[in-house]
Image: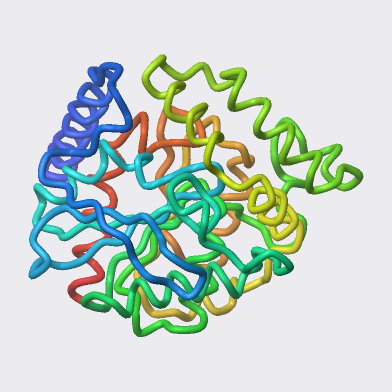
Length: 304
């Protein structure tokens, strides 16, 4: 028993140290990538996607996928932590988002699940696989669907603040859930943009400058279409439960969706769940804790 107590105390001390590192993070210019980052374009089925890579391509590969209204810059703090641990880390802006705004389905088409999944599969196929994949918020759905279609491309899956239920995903969102059934996708997207631009999340000046600036580029049509997609999330929980790879659900204790929904998904698919003292964006506010848990996940994926 004494040995177990010492181990628990050591684990708690390590977690406290990681929390201290996260609390010490100062405001920064989020448009500046980590030293050594290479910016490049990737020709995907939807068009040219703005991408970044950091680390040695010979090392195990991690692909971090940002969500709607986001971009690869959301991982500025997380990228070097994974690189320092020996991983080759990549990310790209989704079609229609920020520097990938020109990519999409064409004038008369829609940004649908098939488009986003095809882009992710093509990106994974363009490098070493299986890869460790993170899907952030809406991109968690994209990653789940890609895993269901091409499981051999995945070593692990991290769902970062991803919608925890199929169907109408907004019904479980804290501040819009009650109205989401009657509001149009365009109206919900407008509310999301309003909340971000008016800084309802109370982010720092450097972060706010990035999230506001991105809307000068991001396709509004892509946001409307993504919100419409999130009203019809496919149910792939049975596939996730039998995928045979380690899965991590990582969320803030003030996430958009209620904790019981995230925990319910974790129980149903046999995933680990980690909760941080933050909001919807642990990659921005608790990157040291998130990286620690992701690296533990990667280690389990390497030995399966």
